[in-house]
Length: 457
Image (cartoon, rainbow, N blue to C red; front, side, top):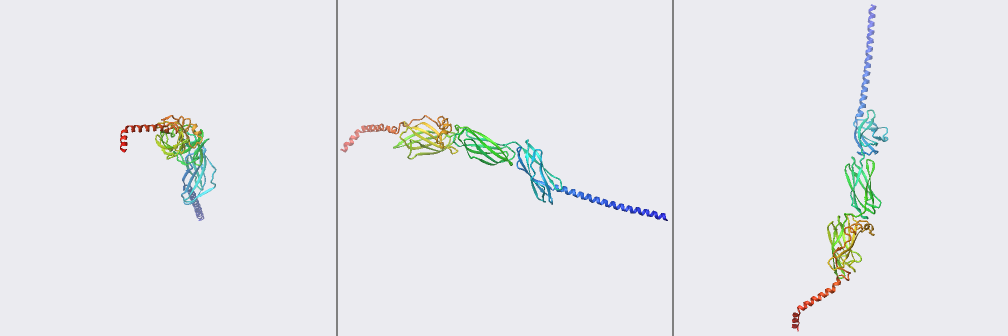
């Protein structure tokens, strides 16, 4: 009997131990499952934070840099999630640039549905080429955000060239020069400042501004240049590519001499008529030059005195190879020295004049130009324009001794002598001719006249 109760007691003990072990295993398994679920939830939250923030805009301050330029990258990040996310340490990674000290310190938060904009400043290293840098920014509890950025480095400059200029420059005369600027870079250039400089040179305008020249395009800028001496004209050009300022120069040698395109007034078909004390000259002015003459006016100079109906005559504009007529009334004591003055303007508004000294001493129907000189009207001494070969210069400018419209020996002769020895010197001959003709008429009509007289008696 005792043996039976001992056996039952052992079986009951084993059952109690088994139940206790089973309960401990179940508790341990539940704890492990709960821990694993918590870990998975935490990992999912970290991934979601970085995945919900994305790059919505990227821009550089220029499309192309010179080696050594400073640049700025601007990146906008948008939070597409439902809660604020912390961002920190924006930077740009590349061996071809040097990043400036970070302007952002500590953590910044971007709210749900909001954006944050970050700027990274850097300096470009040589050589030229196209490189990809990596923008990166950390998140509070997740992975960093990365975005590739293309950076181009090129040494092409803003190129300048003089595309229009005179064949040579007349001293003291304003003439147009056109400077063409060509942007050979892939990005726009802006704030272009052009300053003409040179010893003994006046420029109108003195400075010219151009706001922008687009990539691959060009623009023309015109200047009125007045040289006082032979020199070099330098166009100093500054421009900005991004926030960096660069410079280029265009040099134009200024050589003084004959302007082969200038207007050349030539006087033809001069005729003189007299009416009492007032004499009258008529004729034509022909423009034998390449360019037009504007505001052409004809008059006489000392010792002749313009007076009467046409003291000066305005022809107006005379195109190249065209002509205009004039009619001048004047008085003069000596018709062998009658200066005929022709004034005109060029396309830049410069005043010029040519003086043709007429000899009206002969008795034929036309006059003789015995001397001629041309000067720029604003040059009171006439030294610069008449001595160096500009318009009217002695070395061959229009109206000069060797150039077109210069000294000539011809047209035909006209009414020789002074005013007292001109047409008035023929009065006795004319009077004698009249008396002779009257005598002949009376002789032929003598019988008829005699009969008339007898009838009257």
